[in-house]
Image (cartoon, rainbow, N blue to C red):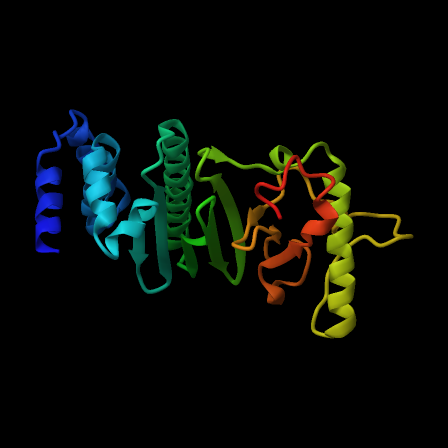
Length: 290
């Protein structure tokens, strides 16, 4: 182990510092002074920038890192940086994920840039609202974001990112990215199916699951359009081609709805596992969903 860590250290030290690293650090420090960006996050941003640039620029470094126990899994999904605010009535904790060690650097960079932009926008919005509240005799404001690896198999990596906003009551949203690890492509619903018939197949199955759950559990309540209903306002009718989804470890399609989207807030995030047999004829192949 000591030899392996020494090799890791040596590989890391021999990586040339990128020309724009000073700009990355200076820019982070500049933002911290203007927006009260936590100093520990600035240091974390610089360190994380070096780490990810090291992984991307040195296959030897990445390989060595992946061979070290415990640390190895972080090569796939790691925490790039964190934004934090910790005041009496204002709380923010935003954790930014990063995907690394993909050969498809266009995909890797686009995902990581998206994750960084998402959280930067959340942080900027939070600080703006916080400053406005302070000018108007204060208030309570909170936000929490993070991520979880939903699936990590030989073929599939599914990452879920959550955002919890707290202003009076709380709202929760989830967004997913599912990656084909071998072909290194980002999967979408239209990519999985031959044509748009999957929309009705999945939608009708979800309604049936809603009915069954409500029949057997009086605490379950879903808002959906049933036969004979003349309106769809506020009621679930059909999924869209951009519906939140991921593929679980059992190669099943999971459709996800945000808090309040199809049910009362007390039910939180809602997920429905779609039986693979009803989708088999509509699938392009059974490579992902089985």
